[in-house]
Length: 242
Image (cartoon, rainbow, N blue to C red; front, side, top):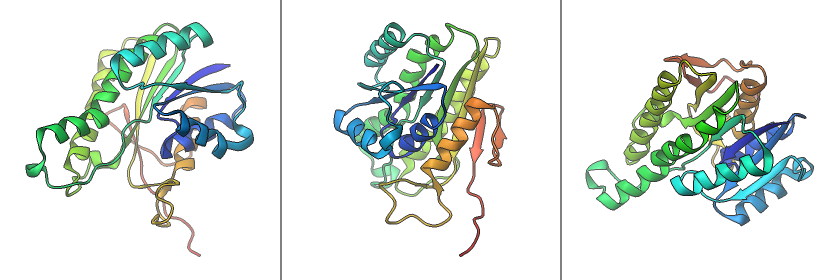
């Protein structure tokens, strides 16, 4: 059984990813969450899929350097080799124009949206390199392509995250590892956003299906666009009317 780590798996998008991964029969899914109650809620939402032999919760911050390294050592010691690592980290911020952002806010949002991905990569890619054929699959957002008024820090961090992925792919091109980022280009229909979601929004479960396809087959039926080799863009698709 292959070990898959989903950092932020108890979040809105993460839940869809975890549900899809557990719907397979050959993956052990290790979820990190900073709060025990969020993982408990995830278990409840997953219902019968939350098999304690295949769904493992680790409470800790996989996007903070020292905590991430501790989590990596625990996974190696308790569950063996890590073969797939998926950072579904960050959130949303939309609280004013860039010129009015104070240094403390800038640092806090940048840390949440970007620095966490750097710390995650530094802690867990070395674990993937311990065996052949590992997969690092970042989850990003379409704000990387389009500036959102009053949410500029998110767009800046998301764009930097794309370059982080490209840089990792370039530096590890001669190693037996796949470095990819799935950019969900649009708002995602999660539990939190259900009340305002529009019919054309990509759902968290659809993100999960694409992630699972990429792990299992290396491709998916969803018409992804590839950019710069390592970047896969998941655009909304036209849905049947009515």
